[in-house]
Image: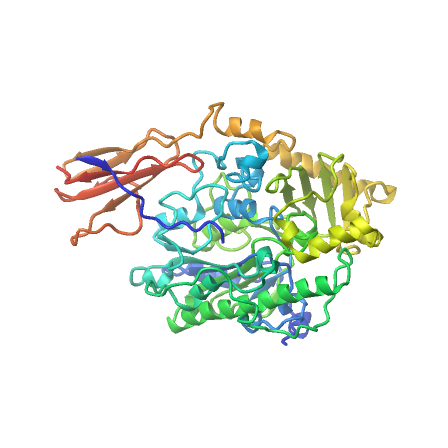
Length: 587
């Protein structure tokens, strides 16, 4: 008997004063300085756990990165006991494309995941909802770790520009936690902290009630309140009259200072939530067999930060704590891209990165022989407004290519215009109250090429592209961009409608993964799927008559007793999932 079965999977879509100047001034990670740690994990049978602590819309606004505006005791402790990486860059200035890169190890522009968002704002754009479609052999990094025996959890934001296959996670929900794994099983756990998100600047102001999930450690009996705390209920972590270093591209007004206070206050609350998760790790006796990553999903939340591919939109802090505090309180200045996370994760557990991955491992057994020389980034459609911009950066200089120079820098994006600072800047621009630096963003057009010295000009305000002194650097970065675009098959001027047709092989509708084909012979279960690259998952009904929460990844024929009740599903990334099927009693 075959019948349709519900997936039964929760998918969250919308949804994280100690100065270290003295500590880090005399300590810096040298080449191969983590070799001792890498050797130790490669020579042990016990594989490390991996814990990712991921916050949103986060520039380097914390003490370990030189900003002591707010105290962050938990992140500061991580930095004291770990390695600080000041030069991590996202592949986009916004979350979903960047998370697509992290999840797959491929540039969003190479898989159709570059437009934010691919499955909304269809009324405004006139386009069909779609998903990124990577090559057939691409798997989410979490599925690769699951296939290697890791218990993989996500708590709780996904947002990958595609729907995660059913096989991607053991758990992906508000209740997901490593504590639900089998005894002794290594884990890869992701905790997402959303209070630092841009929307945390909107009025009425208040922390999200659901963020309390991090204090409840997978307690499925706890009921979260919806919405935000009132401003009166919201904890205040720093005085409202705190003096801030206002970036020169923002006016120094009460409204801007208020939004900056919110930004830092949100960071302090996120630090408390990080502390709650770290305490659970210590309470479980797992700290010294766990590699801990803390990072943001791109740069800051304020106007002229988020969505832009200036450093203010791309640069985000990275701290990694290794077991036994290897290389504690050091800095590693190498350039790192989000595209490097997937190969590095495999390398850290002793597995060779997949050939399709477009980054390189910066840690572990398969660490690249040379550090990367450039990072790359892209900006395309954001919600209802479209542009096409590409960037390449080395240790000092950034080259930006504007494919639609006739368009202004600032584009009217309704979501961003809910930020009080943005509203005031638009009003000031209309009234002629912005200075020359602040007016730059509101120019009617932009040059086809831009070149910035990011050390001398960290806010990227002085375009050097026409300066003959920098002609050699301009040509170097221009050539590197051309090489990169060709390598990843990125056509920045391809209209999004044409991109959708390309992803769907000229068809009018999103392709659907074929139903899995099931064979059962002499106690051996075999499953296949006619859709190339489909991930296949199965569930076996428990003795008590219930189904497991997660799908087991099918990798090879499985020995099963007769009368087993079985459910099977197939799902290729970017395609619709197959119809799950259930067999009541194998014979």
